[in-house]
Image 1 (tube, rainbow, N blue to C red):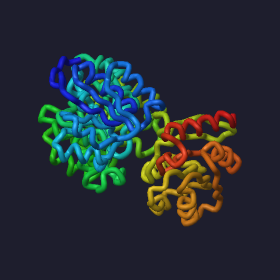
Image 2: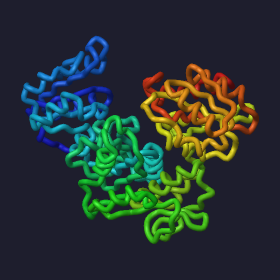
Image 3: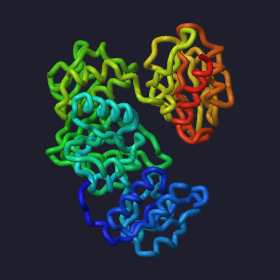
Image 4: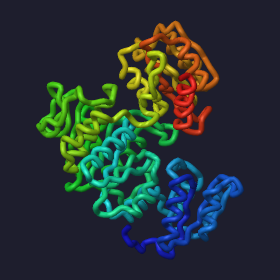
Length: 450
């Protein structure tokens, strides 16, 4: 960890806890800052806050009192989930108090360079693939960020021999100042999180922050099949490395004649890739580009891509029972992700879908339902998804209370050779705390069937 003094004896407010807030508060305390933590959850129900209190950190729980901003804080480290229209954040901005996320702290203390991955879809799979390829190539990678391990924790132990492979959300990227990845990846851009960002332009601008501090000695791997991504790339100072699932490029990563290429070099045959789905080709090509730029050999790349079975909750193969294959795609929290999941299969699909109602319809899903033989719906959006299914000509539709019952219902409706796919097209928060909880319920229900 780099020894930095910029926070010594400075008053800093950590707003919102969860894993990233706890890590940020502990790190700042270690760096000599006068830290105050403010979390909405009451102290009696907040073991994280209690732990920080035991470290000697000031803790204020049970609300976000706006008068806190009068205490002379020089910096706020914000939980990424707290929107910028929150009164505390708006008040801080009016007072000229800088607001960052803990990713920025991680960068400031890290001795290891970063490989940063963002985009609307494919972030987690791409992050995991890059990590696995670097590990297979003996590059000593560390995985971090929005994938479950907190960046400012792992950065404390990282050395110059490591590389931190980090998944980054638009929420995190809005809170950077100096963060500069040696290699950045932008997988794709679609409309998402507009309830947080307010406009498409703000969302895209947040994603573009991944390259804002890059220089000509860095690399920016971008999706050449998307005009919006290429517009973002045009504003970057980094060396642009394109990838394409449809074009034969002269440089970057692409497919030609059944082979995956990087800069005119054959890397491996497309047929040897184990991941299902055309949409995963974006993730594969961008990760191959990052691996090659990191001097990983083709043998290591082939070893990973020929055996990789997917990330948990992202088109995860759960198993087979009575000649039915079960896939957990609980991470599909938007329509595009579900369209991609369905298109990964040529066999008949029984789709399990539904969740939080954000006010949208599901007309976009209709063209993708052509080989969905039955729908099992649940959650707030059950009726809306059923309307789309009827429009698509699906005659077998059942509504249930939860994912566990959806598995039971889907099995009864299925025949040998069918795929039973959980791909909700919605966030989980109407019924489940996270998409992981929802996916775990699906996995448990499948095991109960067996």
